[in-house]
Length: 119
Image 1 (tube, rainbow, N blue to C red):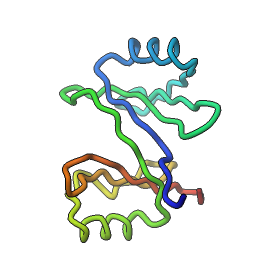
Image 2: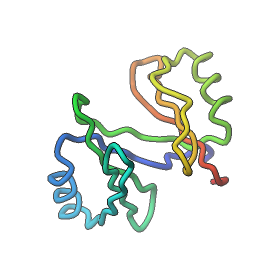
Image 3: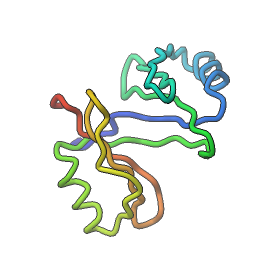
């Protein structure tokens, strides 16, 4: 399948509780990464996409799925031309790649990701 899901992200007010739950349920292990303004905890199951957990004051709890794209600018422009609402991006994730967060025409939120290295 072209453009698979490549990353899943959980925004939660209680990262420790979420880590405990997903470790107990699925056996996931987490690596904490100091991003300056926050700690971003990553996980990678034995198959399928990995992801991350973080907390951001004032944000609701949600999962966000990222779809891999080869050209973030072209994909963002195409999404907008098809009726998507741009929420954020394209923006650089320093040293990692580029991302865009958008709402599809039905209101569902989804993200796109272009890595610095080819997928």
